[in-house]
Structure formats: C-alpha cells, structure tokens
Amino acid sequence: MRIGFFGGSFDPPHRGHLAVALAAAEAFRLDHVLLAPTAQQPLKPGGAVAPFKDRLAMVELLCQGEARFQASALDAPLTHGAPNYTIDTLIHLRAELSGDTTVFVIVGADAFLDLRRWRSPDGLLEVAEWIVVSRPGFSFTDLDALKLSPEQLARVHLLPGVAEPVSATEIRFRLSEGHDCSEIVPAPVLEYIREYHLYGT
Image (cartoon, rainbow, N blue to C red; front, side, top):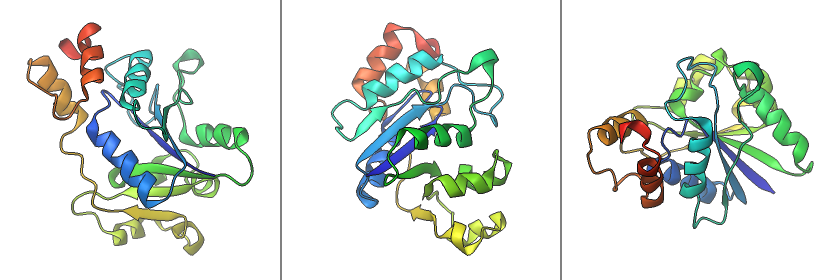
C-alpha cells in the first residue's frame, strides 16, 4: 500500500491543492491520499483564518468525486493550543498502518527547503518518503543547502510541472471583495464559504 499525506492550512482548499494531489497520486502510484488541514502550524504562529472544523469540512467537499482522496483529522487541534508537529503526526499515522505500507509526504518545494527549521528533520526523512512539488525557479540542486545524506536524498522525489495558479491569500482577498472565484474554488467549497460567511463573504 502506498499512502500520500498532504498537510497544510487549506485556508481555503482550492483546485490547486486538488491538482497537486492528483499529480502526486498519478506519478507515484498512490493508493490513497490523506488531505489533512493543520490546526496550528508551528512556523505560522498567526494561525489560519478559518476555524479547523470549517477547513476540514471544506477539504471533505474538495475530495468529493475522487475515490482515492480522503479528508483527515490527523492534525486536529491539540490540548492547550499546542502546535501540530509533522513528526508526531507521521509517527501516529505509521502506528495505524501495516508494516508494508509506504507513506509519502506531499509538500511544496518552498516549505521543504525550510526542513531544517522543522522539529526532528532527520526523523522526518526516516519515517516517510517525500514528494517535493516543484515551484518556478526551483532546482533539485537547491536541496544541497539541506545537507542531506545520500540515503536521505534517495527518499526525496521531485514532482515538477504542477503550478498553483493563485495563492490562498489571494483567494481570501478576492472573496472578501466579492470577486468571482469559481475558476479556482470548487462550487461546493464556495457554497460552504458563503453559507458560513467565511473570509468576509
């Protein structure tokens, strides 16, 4: 079994996220992809705009129609608002899976290049394989700055040619201004945003 783990703010989830998950699933023959909103990202102390429960509900709507995709609450809020560390999440996920299951973490190149600031970076490279989604101007040689061993580098796989046409920050601004976002945000997600008056709608 090959499982993809795709974490992030998903604030809001949009077609760019879907494109990344689809490309990773196809390129690396993933049986399932877990899309997991993060309650509190350690390197983003400001936190997400929408509450976790709403972001999880929107990810569930984003996954509709994609049998391989599943919204996951693995990164749900912790007690006392503690941050969600990816190493803890992956260890928990691994404990739930059979020994012959391979976990692939799907991450943008910009975030992955910050790996040394994450908790237990070497442990992260031991517990999972990594699918690094290329960004414009990103080269595999940029990974040299992480000083990965040959064994670690063998667990890092580049996924080129996937571009998110607009950022979540830009989407939130456009929604607050009343602009049409139907080309980038799926209709069920848009309906949820409007029903619960998220992002100033």
